[in-house]
Length: 424
Image 1 (cartoon, one colour):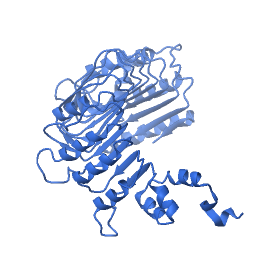
Image 2: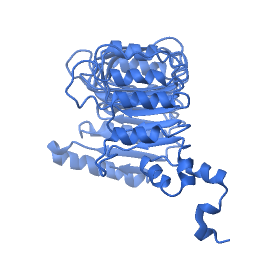
Image 3: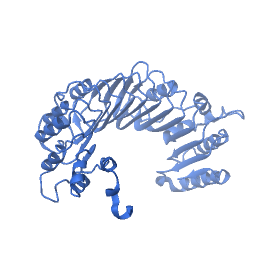
Image 4: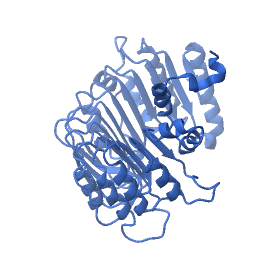
């Protein structure tokens, strides 16, 4: 038998159906349905359907009609992804047809691009209440500025992602109330939130990327929380006991005033980023996180008032003694300058050691106090017996070129002495 020429026709019907069940793209499903009657019947058992943004453009047919025709022909659809435009009437029909089998739903609602007032997403989002068996829900371009959607309790939903949304505090509260068993919760590129209270008993992973003035207030009660990333929060509180092992706090447009995260006995990765932080917020979290393996501090300025101020001096020896398990360390600009101070280096002894450090990134933006900075770099190398890579980034020194050139050549000399140093 010539398998090369016979192709899939030589396979048993059950195996053909199993293979065709992995076809996802609506275009491919339509093409396969035209091959033969047997394949057309097999395509009704597809488990996942994906409709791209441009569905129907070539044929000049409304996307609604194409999606409806295909979805309503399916017998056991488990995943539905729709990026093309659709109406709430069509969505209602799709979800009624698939309510017993649908586990994953992803919709590009696109209401942010339309000039409508109020809750323009409401009718579409209300339809989702029919899909009571959902495990994963992803929504794009949602507009919820007044009341939350009329959802009952989603007992099976464990992953909720909302991308590019405009919503108010009350709407977010209502959404979370209808999804009490979430383990993964994500808001990406969302605006309009000022105060968010997240209380989810099973939540383990949470990511919040909030647009605006960077003055959001976030409060979380999640005893099983392990990973948390937030951008745009000015005040963050994680209440009670938790199991955080990764924490990332960033604020690109505002200032971080307070971090109240309690004890961090299991935290292994910490990232602090932003332009302006209150020193107390940084100091508090560094004191609590003594078991860190990875630490990244990319903060430009300090100060508890509106005035941008340099960081207070940080004792080099005490800092690394307080974090003896550090394997990866990054300090940028003013933060490194705070470590590279004259008084700090006086505490160094031949016995000083950073036992676990393997890789470090240091950004230097000014050649001022060059002796202290070079001494700190050399101390970092000398005290780290396991160090295998040191990245030194030199930037923003154009206003003092002669001094910057001299500083660069001195750093270059350090590189010649230690081959694992990389200058960027």
